[in-house]
Length: 401
Ligand SMILES: *[C@@H]1O[C@H](CO)[C@@H](O)[C@H](O)[C@H]1NC(C)=O
Ligand SMILES: *[C@@H]1O[C@H](CO)[C@@H](O)[C@H](O)[C@H]1NC(C)=O
Ligand SMILES: *[C@@H]1O[C@H](CO)[C@@H](O)[C@H](O)[C@H]1NC(C)=O
Ligand SMILES: *[C@@H]1O[C@H](CO)[C@@H](O)[C@H](O)[C@H]1NC(C)=O
Ligand SMILES: *[C@@H]1O[C@H](CO)[C@@H](O)[C@H](O)[C@H]1NC(C)=O
Ligand SMILES: *[C@@H]1O[C@H](CO)[C@@H](O)[C@H](O)[C@H]1NC(C)=O
Ligand SMILES: *[C@@H]1O[C@H](CO)[C@@H](O)[C@H](O)[C@H]1NC(C)=O
Ligand SMILES: *[C@@H]1O[C@H](CO)[C@@H](O)[C@H](O)[C@H]1NC(C)=O
Ligand SMILES: *[C@@H]1O[C@H](CO)[C@@H](O)[C@H](O)[C@H]1NC(C)=O
Ligand SMILES: CC(=O)N[C@H]1CO[C@H](CO)[C@@H](O)[C@@H]1O
Image 1 (tube, rainbow, N blue to C red):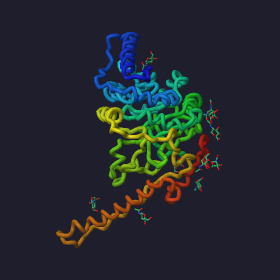
Image 2: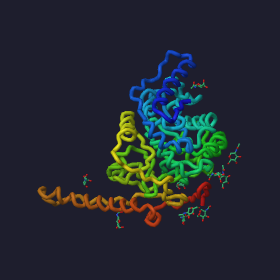
Image 3: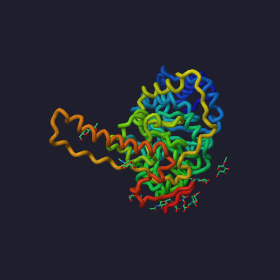
Image 4: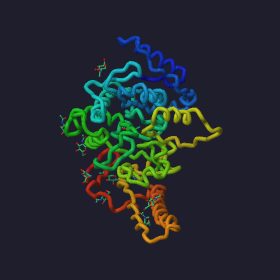
């Protein structure tokens, strides 16, 4: 119910204040005030004019998973930063809160065990109320930061009448892979239609109760509905949807030096350093409210003088355009060097450092060669691929081999 005009920050602000008072008047708690919007982001008119062609062509409804505890903090930060850039912005919660405002989904509780139930109900809600007003239906958490313009740009290459869904793909559990929840995922109109009209009420397609891991249940559902979990990397193999913040993906160590679960889940090779992230990155996760405001400051206000933007009109296809790439697996860990035993104390440190350093370097080199040439990963793909999960998906149809 919370929409934003597109052209000027002034009307944005007016629309917000006005919308809020309407809600306050309509609701019985007329005295309830909107949340303070002192930090409300100023989006320049120019930004929106430039992007206007896509704003109208690639209409994105964003719904944000939140809960009463976060309405005035995390969800508010979304509302004051990236949220209004969506064509339609909705906050889904277990209670109606006229201040944000939120939609209190009926019959839905709070807590991790309810996330799938909330997701089911939220998609049903947006389909019932907004099916004609959006082409894409994007789910985000209240700690996901989204660059909505890049989401539109990326989606502009696809047809919303096809059964597709997009995000950061994980390789486990679901044959075709499933999209991780934290970075957000977007369903095409056709995918949303199938979910609500075919999956929602059919227990052989989608889980009917509220339990289970939200993103996994959605992945199973999508697969049963023949909806493809797409590759969202750019043509250079750099990711666009991130399960963590940029620093985690940028700096080696986050995933590379320890047994991080993400390492075992990610479907496509991870990328790090300056090449961690696509120029047209869409989302980061685990972003606290303050960081959202700072990201907004750097992305929408501060501008280095004289930069050119030479992006092609439509993004180049991702490396795995036909969804035939096998799952990526981490290179084997180097075996730890034997503990030094008879080395005098004076030389101990230097000697023990050597095997450590060299093994780490070789590990990194192997990673680098994979990430810098994503097209060759098929060849490089190691022999530990799980044969039992071999599934080929072509564009819109999924077939188990
Ligand atoms: C929120 O309000 C709507 C509309 O009045 C109502 O249908 C819904 O049941 C309410 N949700 C909750 C959780 O009370
Ligand atoms: C999009 O897909 C639908 C259904 O497959 C098709 O009818 C339509 O022509 C496509 N639109 C474009 C622009 O390709
Ligand atoms: C549920 O889905 C299955 C598998 O697609 C289908 O055979 C069955 O007819 C569906 N049931 C209903 C009630 O639509
Ligand atoms: C999915 O595709 C398979 C094979 O083409 C087909 O048998 C099945 O009915 C489809 N399921 C749905 C829900 O469309
Ligand atoms: C992917 O599919 C397109 C269209 O079906 C086809 O032209 C292209 O050759 C395929 N690419 C690969 C790598 O299979
Ligand atoms: C090097 O190896 C030693 C023992 O194998 C270990 O305690 C230490 O943490 C390692 N250092 C680094 C930087 O990995
Ligand atoms: C790195 O690649 C080289 C050459 O392909 C190989 O010999 C070495 O075992 C690999 N190292 C790791 C840690 O996979
Ligand atoms: C997995 O699928 C690929 C592509 O269809 C095929 O080349 C390969 O032989 C399959 N592997 C197994 C173990 O079925
Ligand atoms: C998948 O696409 C490839 C290349 O376009 C084609 O050869 C193959 O027949 C397709 N498989 C299915 C199941 O549609
Ligand atoms: C992975 C797959 O085939 N789907 C299955 C993926 O592999 C594991 C192990 O075979 C199974 O548990 C899954 O059901």
